[in-house]
Length: 232
Image (cartoon, rainbow, N blue to C red; front, side, top):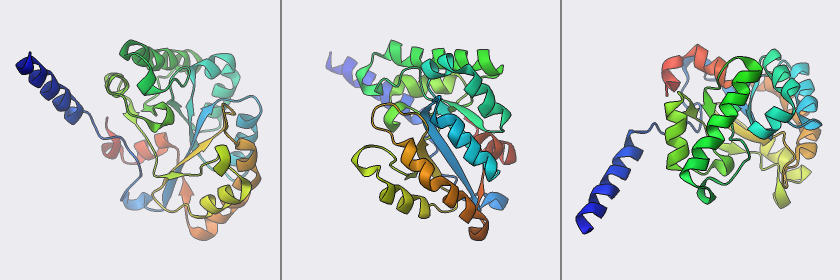
């Protein structure tokens, strides 16, 4: 039994080693060194997703929306608009169940169901995956890999949720965004997210990018620019 346990543990570690490391920032990106990626989680939301899309369009900014399958199924027209506006779609699981609190079977199903819904709406499978709460689970990571999706986390959170999601904190954290950042924000209202506060300061932030010589890219845009950087 001890020998069997050692073998299983070794196999588990080797499996993790073979899986690609999740993307957390753009790093050194050649000609796109002044790039940053804005990402929005937990939508689409019937109130805040359209409002955020309007703001992004006003400043010709591109972003990536990590959507929940249950919300995409309920609001397919918002998924269609996200794509029509030139943004990327990512898989954020079906119901936002915590990766550590679900069975491996359910964890895999959460990804498969969401990808199927996105494909039904857009005709294309998502190539980006972000686990709920940013918590890694082997079954999810493996399923994303099998589906040719790159797992994307973040290196700069606006923390637009909970007690820290007040207006002052959001404004300060937006001002600290720099080149190479993958920025975490939320368009979905679930739980304690505060996209209402985010919307108060996002326009000023986007208007400041020209002076800072920073440019927003969707993940699809970055991938097309230098695909070798993000092959899953």
